[in-house]
Image 1 (cartoon, rainbow, N blue to C red):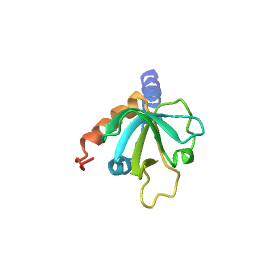
Image 2: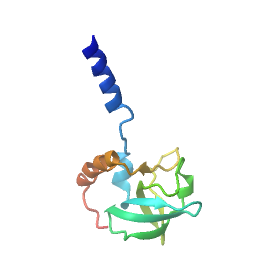
Image 3: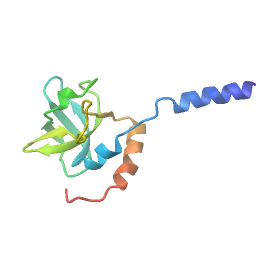
Length: 124
């Protein structure tokens, strides 16, 4: 009985809230970056580009303030689409919920890497 309880506790600890990224969103994004939003400005400080050729630095993300729960100063994985000289968090065609970004945890980055390996280059 003790072994069974230990197994259940272990399962709950290690499988609760698994990291989920939207594969279609990642696949449709022109750029996938790790970035840190600045407070109330729509600016994202790009720290690393995982897909595409977006250089490090600040970019204006026109729908960044629509992301729910976004915290300035926290690093996120952000799928981006360029619109003119600015960017938008990539959304799906019939998406009815706010744009999604993902905390840049080690687990999220580990999940991101195989999604990017599965992508075919699009000329970005």
